[in-house]
Image (cartoon, rainbow, N blue to C red; front, side, top):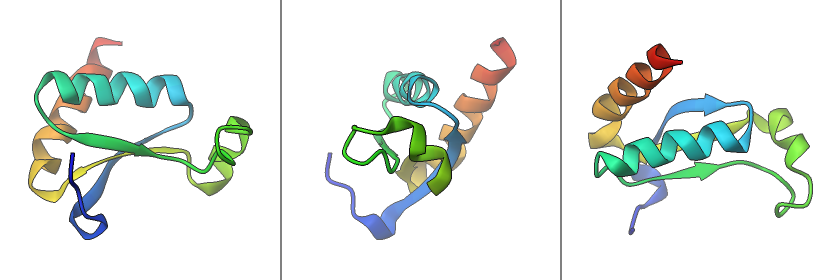
Length: 78
């Protein structure tokens, strides 16, 4: 996946890595590339991610609307 920083937008922010991983998996199943951004001190301190805004799922700007719709439908299933 080749994504430039200026092409990425946050489509949702989660409070933990598991929820962000599940969301990213749902997007990838729909053939939408994405990534998770979080400050976890290199994975050594995942509990501090909330201090920097949580676990952010990012996608390309042109995929953002579809990604948000997919994630919204996933939340309705919970």
